[in-house]
Length: 275
Image (cartoon, rainbow, N blue to C red; front, side):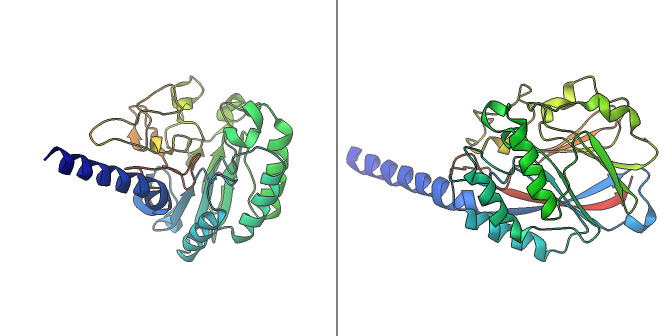
Protein backbone atom coordinates (compact mmCIF):
# COMPACT_ATOMS: atom_id res chain seq x y z
CA UNK A 1 0.00 0.00 0.00
CA UNK A 2 2.81 2.41 0.91
CA UNK A 3 4.61 1.63 -2.35
CA UNK A 4 1.44 2.19 -4.41
CA UNK A 5 0.76 5.49 -2.64
CA UNK A 6 4.32 6.68 -3.12
CA UNK A 7 4.23 5.68 -6.79
CA UNK A 8 0.94 7.52 -7.29
CA UNK A 9 2.26 10.64 -5.64
CA UNK A 10 5.39 10.47 -7.75
CA UNK A 11 3.41 10.19 -10.98
CA UNK A 12 1.14 13.08 -9.91
CA UNK A 13 4.16 15.19 -9.09
CA UNK A 14 5.78 14.41 -12.43
CA UNK A 15 2.60 15.28 -14.33
CA UNK A 16 2.19 18.54 -12.40
CA UNK A 17 5.79 19.46 -13.12
CA UNK A 18 5.44 18.76 -16.84
CA UNK A 19 2.12 20.58 -16.98
CA UNK A 20 3.44 23.71 -15.25
CA UNK A 21 6.55 23.72 -17.46
CA UNK A 22 5.35 22.64 -20.91
CA UNK A 23 1.59 23.21 -21.06
CA UNK A 24 0.22 26.08 -18.99
CA UNK A 25 2.96 28.63 -19.89
CA UNK A 26 1.75 28.39 -23.49
CA UNK A 27 -2.00 27.91 -22.85
CA UNK A 28 -3.03 31.44 -23.73
CA UNK A 29 -6.43 32.70 -22.59
CA UNK A 30 -8.30 35.57 -24.24
CA UNK A 31 -10.25 37.20 -21.41
CA UNK A 32 -13.28 39.21 -22.57
CA UNK A 33 -14.74 41.91 -20.35
CA UNK A 34 -17.00 44.96 -20.64
CA UNK A 35 -15.34 48.34 -20.09
CA UNK A 36 -17.89 51.02 -19.10
CA UNK A 37 -16.23 54.43 -19.52
CA UNK A 38 -17.54 57.83 -18.44
CA UNK A 39 -18.03 60.31 -21.28
CA UNK A 40 -17.53 57.67 -23.97
CA UNK A 41 -18.60 58.97 -27.39
CA UNK A 42 -21.53 57.09 -28.89
CA UNK A 43 -19.38 56.22 -31.92
CA UNK A 44 -17.09 54.14 -29.69
CA UNK A 45 -19.80 52.02 -28.06
CA UNK A 46 -19.14 48.40 -28.96
CA UNK A 47 -15.57 49.01 -30.07
CA UNK A 48 -12.89 46.74 -28.64
CA UNK A 49 -9.74 47.58 -26.73
CA UNK A 50 -7.12 44.86 -26.42
CA UNK A 51 -4.52 44.83 -23.64
CA UNK A 52 -1.26 42.94 -24.16
CA UNK A 53 1.24 43.00 -21.32
CA UNK A 54 4.63 41.65 -20.24
CA UNK A 55 5.85 39.90 -23.38
CA UNK A 56 9.34 39.41 -21.90
CA UNK A 57 11.05 38.78 -25.21
CA UNK A 58 14.38 37.12 -24.46
CA UNK A 59 16.06 33.75 -24.01
CA UNK A 60 13.97 32.20 -21.23
CA UNK A 61 11.21 30.64 -23.35
CA UNK A 62 10.61 30.19 -27.10
CA UNK A 63 9.91 33.49 -28.84
CA UNK A 64 7.79 31.59 -31.37
CA UNK A 65 5.10 31.46 -28.67
CA UNK A 66 4.96 35.27 -28.54
CA UNK A 67 4.80 35.50 -32.34
CA UNK A 68 1.96 32.96 -32.52
CA UNK A 69 0.10 34.81 -29.76
CA UNK A 70 0.44 38.16 -31.53
CA UNK A 71 -0.91 36.61 -34.72
CA UNK A 72 -3.91 35.23 -32.82
CA UNK A 73 -4.48 38.66 -31.28
CA UNK A 74 -4.30 40.42 -34.64
CA UNK A 75 -6.83 37.98 -36.08
CA UNK A 76 -9.44 39.33 -33.65
CA UNK A 77 -9.27 42.74 -35.41
CA UNK A 78 -9.33 44.91 -32.27
CA UNK A 79 -10.11 48.60 -32.63
CA UNK A 80 -7.51 49.70 -30.07
CA UNK A 81 -4.47 47.83 -28.80
CA UNK A 82 -2.52 48.92 -25.73
CA UNK A 83 0.71 47.35 -24.52
CA UNK A 84 1.42 47.76 -20.80
CA UNK A 85 5.16 47.24 -20.54
CA UNK A 86 7.98 44.73 -20.05
CA UNK A 87 8.57 44.11 -23.72
CA UNK A 88 11.87 42.36 -22.98
CA UNK A 89 13.74 40.48 -20.28
CA UNK A 90 16.87 42.50 -20.86
CA UNK A 91 20.31 40.94 -20.42
CA UNK A 92 22.12 42.54 -23.34
CA UNK A 93 21.84 44.03 -26.85
CA UNK A 94 20.65 40.70 -28.26
CA UNK A 95 17.23 41.42 -26.75
CA UNK A 96 16.92 44.49 -28.97
CA UNK A 97 17.45 42.32 -32.05
CA UNK A 98 15.00 39.74 -30.74
CA UNK A 99 12.43 42.48 -30.10
CA UNK A 100 12.72 43.62 -33.72
CA UNK A 101 12.20 40.06 -34.94
CA UNK A 102 9.11 39.55 -32.79
CA UNK A 103 7.50 42.90 -33.57
CA UNK A 104 7.49 42.23 -37.27
CA UNK A 105 4.29 40.44 -36.22
CA UNK A 106 2.88 43.25 -34.07
CA UNK A 107 -0.83 43.19 -33.26
CA UNK A 108 -2.24 46.65 -33.96
CA UNK A 109 -5.61 48.32 -33.50
CA UNK A 110 -7.70 49.51 -36.42
CA UNK A 111 -8.12 52.89 -34.76
CA UNK A 112 -4.95 53.14 -32.71
CA UNK A 113 -2.07 51.40 -30.96
CA UNK A 114 -0.03 52.75 -28.02
CA UNK A 115 2.04 51.43 -25.15
CA UNK A 116 4.08 52.16 -22.06
CA UNK A 117 7.35 50.79 -20.66
CA UNK A 118 7.84 48.41 -17.75
CA UNK A 119 10.70 48.01 -15.33
CA UNK A 120 12.46 45.33 -17.40
CA UNK A 121 12.60 47.78 -20.30
CA UNK A 122 15.04 49.84 -18.19
CA UNK A 123 17.82 47.25 -18.28
CA UNK A 124 19.92 46.12 -15.34
CA UNK A 125 18.43 47.06 -11.96
CA UNK A 126 15.97 49.28 -13.89
CA UNK A 127 18.69 51.95 -14.06
CA UNK A 128 19.62 52.10 -17.75
CA UNK A 129 17.53 54.83 -19.43
CA UNK A 130 19.51 54.36 -22.63
CA UNK A 131 18.01 50.85 -22.92
CA UNK A 132 14.52 52.28 -22.47
CA UNK A 133 15.21 54.88 -25.14
CA UNK A 134 16.39 52.23 -27.61
CA UNK A 135 13.33 50.07 -26.97
CA UNK A 136 11.08 53.11 -27.43
CA UNK A 137 12.73 53.86 -30.78
CA UNK A 138 12.39 50.27 -32.01
CA UNK A 139 8.72 50.04 -31.08
CA UNK A 140 7.94 53.37 -32.74
CA UNK A 141 9.47 52.04 -35.95
CA UNK A 142 6.92 49.22 -35.88
CA UNK A 143 3.99 51.59 -35.36
CA UNK A 144 3.83 51.44 -31.57
CA UNK A 145 4.31 54.89 -29.96
CA UNK A 146 5.27 54.75 -26.29
CA UNK A 147 3.67 57.18 -23.84
CA UNK A 148 6.13 58.37 -21.21
CA UNK A 149 4.09 60.51 -18.82
CA UNK A 150 2.05 61.62 -21.83
CA UNK A 151 -1.45 61.34 -23.26
CA UNK A 152 -2.92 60.98 -26.71
CA UNK A 153 -6.51 61.18 -27.91
CA UNK A 154 -7.47 58.63 -30.58
CA UNK A 155 -10.93 58.71 -32.18
CA UNK A 156 -12.45 60.18 -29.01
CA UNK A 157 -10.65 57.92 -26.51
CA UNK A 158 -8.02 59.67 -24.40
CA UNK A 159 -5.18 57.33 -23.42
CA UNK A 160 -2.77 58.39 -20.68
CA UNK A 161 0.52 56.57 -20.19
CA UNK A 162 2.69 56.71 -17.07
CA UNK A 163 6.31 55.70 -17.33
CA UNK A 164 7.41 52.83 -15.12
CA UNK A 165 7.29 53.27 -11.35
CA UNK A 166 10.66 51.56 -10.81
CA UNK A 167 12.36 53.13 -13.83
CA UNK A 168 14.24 56.40 -14.03
CA UNK A 169 11.49 58.48 -15.69
CA UNK A 170 8.44 57.99 -13.46
CA UNK A 171 6.83 61.44 -13.25
CA UNK A 172 3.02 61.42 -12.91
CA UNK A 173 3.05 65.08 -11.86
CA UNK A 174 4.04 65.92 -15.43
CA UNK A 175 0.77 64.58 -16.82
CA UNK A 176 -1.97 64.00 -14.24
CA UNK A 177 -2.83 67.69 -13.60
CA UNK A 178 -3.42 68.12 -17.34
CA UNK A 179 -5.90 65.22 -17.73
CA UNK A 180 -9.39 66.41 -18.68
CA UNK A 181 -11.85 64.43 -16.55
CA UNK A 182 -14.64 65.30 -18.99
CA UNK A 183 -13.07 63.08 -21.62
CA UNK A 184 -13.31 59.31 -22.04
CA UNK A 185 -10.08 58.32 -20.31
CA UNK A 186 -8.07 55.12 -20.00
CA UNK A 187 -4.73 55.16 -18.18
CA UNK A 188 -1.84 52.74 -18.67
CA UNK A 189 0.40 52.09 -15.67
CA UNK A 190 2.67 49.04 -15.60
CA UNK A 191 2.99 48.64 -11.82
CA UNK A 192 -0.31 48.56 -9.88
CA UNK A 193 1.38 49.79 -6.68
CA UNK A 194 1.04 53.27 -8.19
CA UNK A 195 -2.67 53.05 -7.34
CA UNK A 196 -1.75 53.71 -3.69
CA UNK A 197 0.35 56.82 -4.36
CA UNK A 198 -1.08 60.37 -3.97
CA UNK A 199 -0.63 61.22 -7.64
CA UNK A 200 -4.08 60.79 -9.16
CA UNK A 201 -5.48 64.34 -9.10
CA UNK A 202 -9.12 63.12 -8.92
CA UNK A 203 -8.73 60.74 -11.86
CA UNK A 204 -11.82 58.51 -11.89
CA UNK A 205 -11.65 56.08 -14.79
CA UNK A 206 -9.89 52.88 -15.86
CA UNK A 207 -6.27 51.97 -15.11
CA UNK A 208 -4.69 49.06 -16.99
CA UNK A 209 -1.65 47.40 -15.42
CA UNK A 210 0.51 44.30 -15.69
CA UNK A 211 3.76 43.55 -13.85
CA UNK A 212 2.51 40.87 -11.43
CA UNK A 213 1.96 38.02 -13.96
CA UNK A 214 -0.69 36.97 -11.43
CA UNK A 215 2.21 35.46 -9.49
CA UNK A 216 2.64 32.83 -12.26
CA UNK A 217 2.14 30.07 -9.67
CA UNK A 218 -0.95 29.96 -7.46
CA UNK A 219 -1.54 26.99 -5.17
CA UNK A 220 -5.23 26.03 -4.92
CA UNK A 221 -7.12 28.09 -2.33
CA UNK A 222 -3.99 30.10 -1.46
CA UNK A 223 -2.63 33.44 -2.68
CA UNK A 224 0.38 33.45 -5.02
CA UNK A 225 3.50 33.08 -2.86
CA UNK A 226 5.52 35.60 -4.87
CA UNK A 227 4.24 38.94 -6.13
CA UNK A 228 6.54 41.85 -7.11
CA UNK A 229 4.29 44.46 -5.48
CA UNK A 230 4.10 46.08 -2.08
CA UNK A 231 0.33 45.73 -1.94
CA UNK A 232 -0.24 41.97 -2.05
CA UNK A 233 -3.90 42.54 -2.85
CA UNK A 234 -2.84 43.37 -6.40
CA UNK A 235 -2.66 39.93 -7.95
CA UNK A 236 -4.65 39.98 -11.19
CA UNK A 237 -8.08 40.88 -12.49
CA UNK A 238 -10.45 43.76 -11.74
CA UNK A 239 -10.47 46.02 -8.68
CA UNK A 240 -13.01 48.79 -8.06
CA UNK A 241 -12.02 51.82 -5.98
CA UNK A 242 -14.37 54.08 -4.02
CA UNK A 243 -13.01 57.19 -5.79
CA UNK A 244 -14.25 55.97 -9.18
CA UNK A 245 -11.08 54.35 -10.44
CA UNK A 246 -11.19 50.82 -11.83
CA UNK A 247 -7.96 48.81 -11.99
CA UNK A 248 -7.41 45.83 -14.23
CA UNK A 249 -4.22 43.76 -13.84
CA UNK A 250 -3.39 41.55 -16.80
CA UNK A 251 -1.76 38.16 -16.03
CA UNK A 252 0.91 38.69 -18.74
CA UNK A 253 1.51 37.08 -22.10
CA UNK A 254 5.11 36.07 -21.40
CA UNK A 255 6.92 34.90 -18.30
CA UNK A 256 10.08 35.63 -16.36
CA UNK A 257 10.64 31.88 -16.13
CA UNK A 258 8.90 29.13 -18.07
CA UNK A 259 6.61 27.98 -15.30
CA UNK A 260 2.94 28.64 -14.61
CA UNK A 261 0.41 26.85 -12.46
CA UNK A 262 -3.21 27.92 -12.06
CA UNK A 263 -2.32 31.29 -13.68
CA UNK A 264 -2.68 31.01 -17.46
CA UNK A 265 -1.12 33.68 -19.69
CA UNK A 266 -3.60 36.28 -20.83
CA UNK A 267 -4.55 38.78 -23.49
CA UNK A 268 -7.54 40.90 -22.48
CA UNK A 269 -10.22 42.11 -24.88
CA UNK A 270 -12.49 44.82 -23.49
CA UNK A 271 -15.72 45.94 -25.13
CA UNK A 272 -16.31 49.67 -24.66
CA UNK A 273 -19.57 50.81 -23.11
CA UNK A 274 -20.96 54.10 -21.81
CA UNK A 275 -20.82 54.22 -18.02
